[in-house]
Image 1 (tube, rainbow, N blue to C red):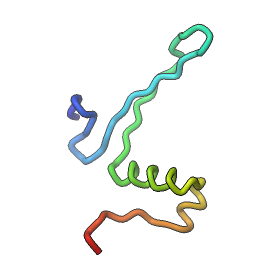
Image 2: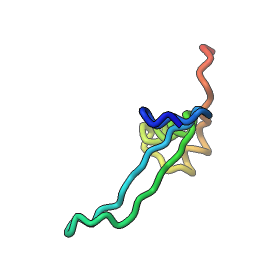
Image 3: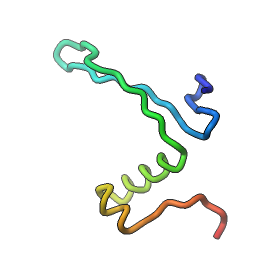
Image 4: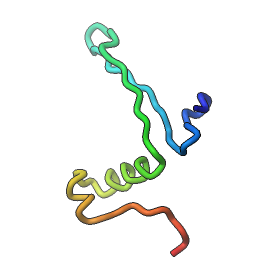
Length: 68
């Protein structure tokens, strides 16, 4: 994995997040999320359409752009 940008050799991106208690500022938990470029694109389109995942998947599919 390229730690500079969080990209793996398989076209995936890795991001780390932490869950912080607002009152004490204590870190409660941490996770690392690994998503493919296609999964990231799908999340962006779903958010733009403001749909839940189930509805979005019924209506749309995400494909790689090939100028068609």
